[in-house]
Length: 202
Length: 225
Image (tube, rainbow over all chains, first blue to last red; front, side, top):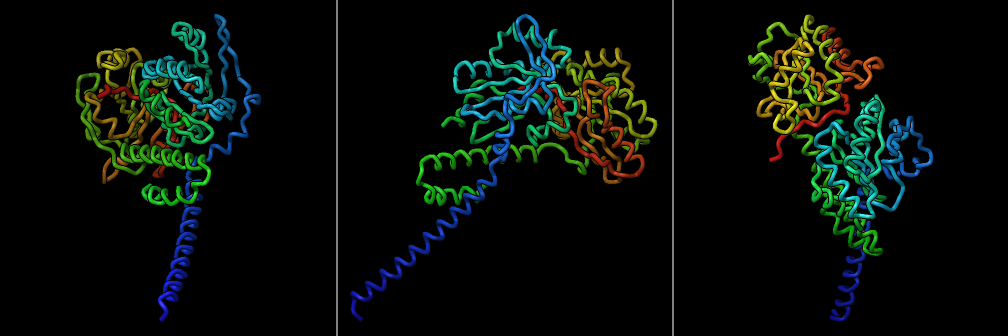
């Protein structure tokens, strides 16, 4: 047989193989895209639902030029699903929670050093203790982050909505941006927190 | 996870058009990793409903050692990890006493355990446990998890954290894990008494309808290694 013809035949099958292989590659890739998308937490879809303007505090406590808004869970959701281009850090804490107080300076420092970070401190202090405990604590420690109070008695119904694995222990933290969202039931040092936030930077 | 890692290079090849997509892929991968590690940690620590709970020998506020096996007559136990300092524990003290009074006679005594390390939180020392118990008139044992070996086996993460155990031939079976009721702060506004409902069901020979609940609580304090 003509060697040139054999070469042509070889080329033809080679091309055919490459083509088939690349189609398989594309199909696998597309499938993997779909699979990955399914695994992304679907909270992103909710972002549009909660606009900050819709939110309504159930109570506002004012003292010493500090105004603390108290929300039930439904109305606090805009704080944990902000639709912005920033890195949002939400910390669940209380003045009576020792490990919370210990890690608070790390959150304050993070906010001070990262203009792209939006910090919200959601206090679980009892509403009747806002004037006696929370506001004095904010003044004494010169807290710069936004502080709001969550007061919703039926914790069993809303804790799983924050994260299905949350046992309800505080401190707890959510870090999220438009692309991802991670929940942490743990304490942070500044270094640990900064490292975690770094993974949200583009 | 492995599977996703394997197909990731293929995905990168196929989607390498816009650089942005590529970045997103890498981020997604790290999210997956974080979540999976947490899941593993959760799965490995603590009991689920249906597991057999370990017995223990812990020092009570009367300086006597207490074990579940001491209770020959009990049909089960209401084990509550609680402490002195936590406002949610304090808010529940009267309700815990009421539970013990109501159910001890029926075979389900309350066994309270303080899981905290007093070096981290001095309010939870053994001496102050004795003081608090006498101030409030605790009718149940208030045990000190010295060395913090028991609470991690149960998987308690916070105070108060309840484990209802049903005594069976195979051991003390976990029948309920979670909160005492659905309103920590205002006992007068409670609508669901989770623990009472669960114990009532067990006393009637049934399993509780609600077997797991969550509530806000104080994370258990341990010395960082």
